[in-house]
Image 1 (cartoon, helix red, strand yellow):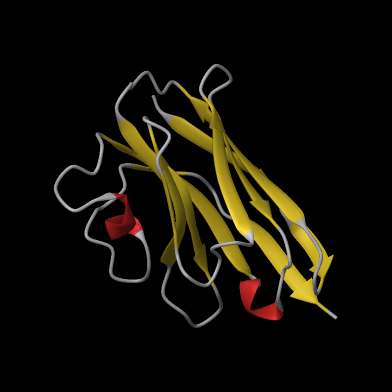
Image 2: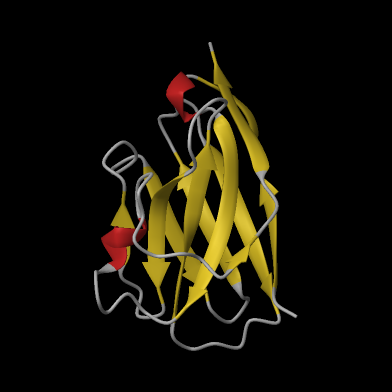
Length: 132
């Protein structure tokens, strides 16, 4: 069965950096979209960074230029490098995957709170806390 195992995160100071990783187990698909979502207390979950099997990426405007999503297909690993962290980045972060590419609406349609695509598999959340 497919399983996503997220790790990393923790605490950082304002302006600091953290790295999240997500190990995919039993994920044999060659056409997919994967990404990171986050949910702050009292807020809806939102998609923030996506990557597909062709290596295309998409970012929510709040994180673009600060966060970088990448994948290691050989290792089945998805990562999110987070730089210039701000208090508003404090949230529970989740990795997720969906079978197939975003042909109909584009990769960006996974982003934000009103994503058009529903993800097929989810990892457990990891906490990221940014403070002064």
